[in-house]
Length: 116
Image (tube, rainbow, N blue to C red):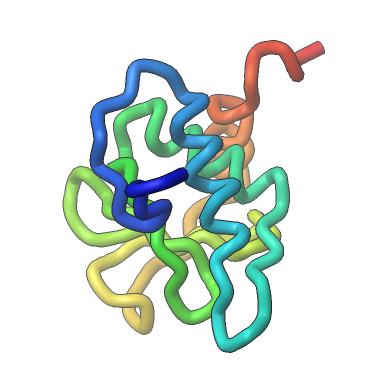
């Protein structure tokens, strides 16, 4: 991906495949000499938040989580395993989101070809 920053790429996209490629590229970004191990569920939640226009497209690693800018203010922090998502202006003051919401975002972010 010459010339594309996977963390802050803001190029327009017509398909969610671009989101997937940026999340995949982000999983190769090193953090303190350790590669991030991002689960499929976390990637699906990221795609779901972006597809439903709840979050902006830029993904950034932040304190062992994935950080997305929330379009209604603040940020989403997604655990690398995808089982915990926080939302707020600051990580230390963020609220944990309900599991049913996370499940819905994971379904929204799952490629249609993977749905049975």
